[in-house]
Length: 231
Image 1 (tube, one colour):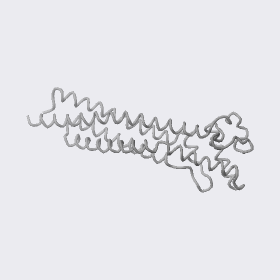
Image 2: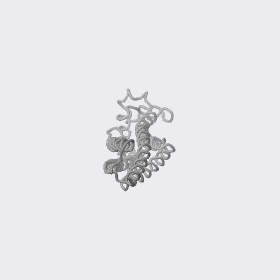
Image 3: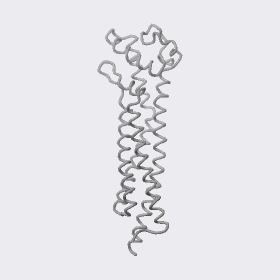
Image 4: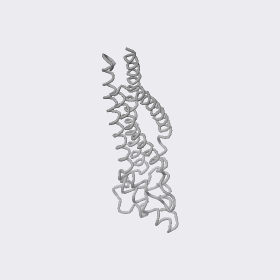
């Protein structure tokens, strides 16, 4: 015997929320793939000075988000199927998956908040190293560093960092870029990555709210199925 009354309403509401959750997983997966391949970001993070590549912290975080999006799509499908079939086993598995996902999201959120400035800090340090090599390094190091600086300057439309380096036009990487001289590269780097981190944060908060609602609904539906199965 199927559920009736308010429990039946919760069943279909859970299905709707799971469908939204499944779509949210697809959105997160799509946003993460976009962040991974977005031209402005990727053009900076594929640079290297000699044998030293740009820091990969940002990409590590993005790969984790990609995995989360894929898992969310699977869990959303599981919840939809479990709700329609009124299966306590599937709904229990769905609830357990949600708890694990929610715990991982909270842990990732805490880690991200604590290390929110780490990505831009590492990229700024990498930029400063390239700048120093271009300014005072050997000819071999200058030949490796100047192309890296040009990518930063052309991508971010800036030149140097006014808080640390003077605007020296003798640096080859800044020649012919007079329009960028008044723009601080450190500030541009911060703006680029902070914008992307805020985007991920907003999506995470929305998904967390949906997950809490789904956990409540799934438990209520499980209890309702158990009660109606007795009768």
